[in-house]
Image 1: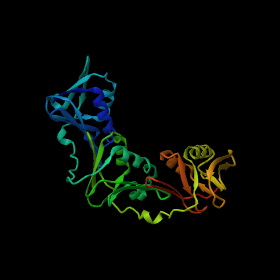
Image 2: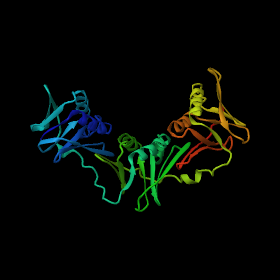
Image 3: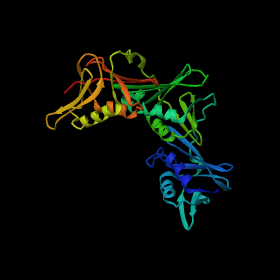
Image 4: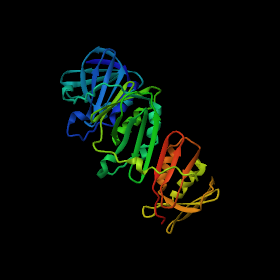
Length: 363
């Protein structure tokens, strides 16, 4: 095999795959990237047996073939090369020779036959959504995923397509984020729990002006994003009945500046400790006071302008849970539903987004 291609484009392609390769794998070949030639391009593939990512890169093909190269060292080397064409020649015993201007390197590879094949998901009508739209939906849900391995069905995001709408839901049992978008798709209902690692890799790949195609197949899901494709196993098990915990909308809401609220919560959180996490929200007529008192540290107190005509009350929340959602929302003015000191707080937006967070005991 002998190919020539742009070092910067190659570096970007390798970067998409490096996170899912591991030098600590019991299978040495999983630390490598598979390189395969096409007519005027190469295909790079990486996998950890749970997730697989492929990406295609334009290249000049002198001699077709395939090989595997250690991902981390290969990526680090290409990143350090000048913005010039690099030629890769694979010799006997899978030794890859890399040449760029006056530089010359050798990397020991492994036989491509040892590299595991990615699962073949039957082609069917995909769900299509703009990449930026899906990226925005992930922005608004990803922080609510659980990291508790004992609750494995919550370790990811629930994707559900039904009646022309794609819904994403994430929860860790103390908060829940749900977002929905209308789709131009006539296929049948689909649902799957996409695991945490796959979600983070998908999120990194999204962002272009192209669409992403989502194809569900048994216990696998495939995301086609232009030059790149991500295939992942889904989480086995039944996602909890989240709809029953979404409270009905209340009329008396707190209308306030998202940015002002975020900054006040962030400042108050500086007084939080592992033993005393909750910050206090005191509601009065057209007034919201955010405070935190910690005996060994002192006290923070800040008033934020708000529109509110309901009953006076005090309620405590984990400041991190509030900051996560406030950082992700695009709106400048938001409505916060606080129906009572022992009931969940809710943020709803006009673009079909709901965030629910349980209160904390004030300490």
